[in-house]
Length: 463
Image (cartoon, rainbow, N blue to C red):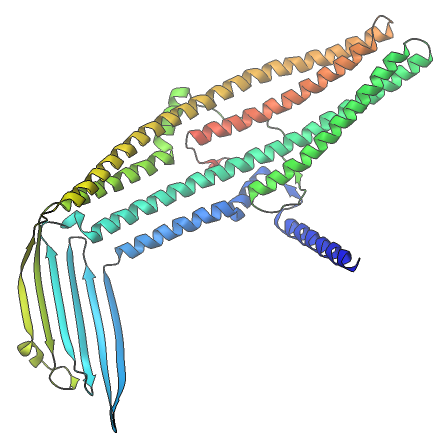
């Protein structure tokens, strides 16, 4: 029993803690604009995409750095038998790499003590053929980092679009579920009134008992539908919190209603053109294609002979202390040209063929992505047109259902109608109202989906 009490207290603590966190994040009244703003600030998936972009930008800055400088000292205690001495050496190094294929290094040990002597070493290498210019390792690294930064920036935009769209959908689905609860509440109220009325008519001998039973069954069915819809409304709020990225357990009042007005739409041709100009997926493919073209060029460059201009100087002091100018007189200078021809090219040819095949695959994927985008826009456009037509039909159905209830009541008062007519008319009105609310919500979400398919920035919309 004691263990069960501890478990119960612990569970209650976590529940209360979760509710407090939800209350701190989510306000009591929540509009769509506030929900989108919260998601842009706390959604974990969006945070991860933002960090990926920052990492890519940091890698781009790293790729731009062309120099490195180091400084250090080394101190050793040497003991042989009864003799010991202390030696020390100060070292520094500088290396430079340019995008044109030039690499240079300078190593200086300006000060030495004990059995350590200072020295100077310098080297220079300039590629004249393989690895020259845009095909140098530095240039390739810089261009790859630039492509990576562009790709991550576009990926962030795609993630942001998906986040905003999911919040909009979850918000209006929650609003729809709330309004559906009202429809079911009204349906239950109507069913109760109809049952009470029939009960009185049955007591007066105007209707049969089966009519009262039928009405009572309708009351219980309406009550069950209301319970199901209330549960659905609570679940929809949890899904909204998931879309936002926090606040699970919060039950804010949603201040927006089911959309009655919708953003303007361009023509289908303009929508497709806008999508092909704006979609980030195509930009990502363009960057991947450019990177693959560079890899193919690099693989082809590896088949060429290597021709480098090289120079090196090395010298060391013959005494401890600081370096003197005599090191240049005693140092060794080497300068010349290096030429290297690859004789066995099988591995390099295979790598070039692989790069060429991958480039063809990327081109095909890019073309297919274009077709997919066109299909997405066309499908979203058709969905909007269909829902607009459906709303007109459902609005007329609602009017007819309301009139049918009036006719059924009049006929029952005149003694020529049946209770079945009232029950069926009420069911028809409930379904018409529910379907109209669903269609209105779906139309707005379809327009949002069309705008996303067109590549328009959803964060700039006025909600």
